[in-house]
Image (cartoon, rainbow, N blue to C red):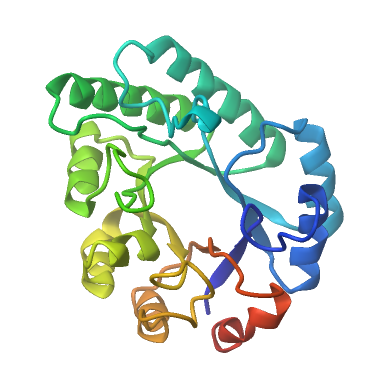
Length: 257
């Protein structure tokens, strides 16, 4: 069936972060992801992973000043040295945690500015090569401009063009069904077109970003399509529980047994 990972930045919000690992394992998850690990020492997180028998699936490369509105550095001219340092930091964490996927956040920049495109391509190439040396897959993700105004990478075709242009064997697509649905695009058709480059999938209900069983987007056909396409990667549960996390997990049962 499918492999679901708990996004610990979203799920089990009543627990302190380091307690969310055991909560997710107790709920039946085998893998976990989250936005960022950098406020903790890697050994603290590794201890939780090992104690709970969880696979660290994914996290994001350091995004810059998140509180000030920065959402990544990869497309920002003049920040190349800072970006390179952020990649090195993420790789060190990934190696310590046994994580094989890193999401390279593009940042907020003008998609029509050729300088931003050149910097983004160069930085993605650098990140992919650095990750390749560590046995890690680098991911890029289109994010909808409603949730993240001004984000550089918003479109699936744009992402696939970048992946093909860079041409790195370990550069893959992070396909977030929620973000694609929020801009009114077809999910199943997008998955079919992306399959050769698909490195990770994420899910949430649309439009509220609650459980996948909520909202207007029907996930059972999407899950079945992933099964039919022989997708054997992880599906990240990046949604905000409407109530207690475990009370809202009924949707997952048909797809893990």
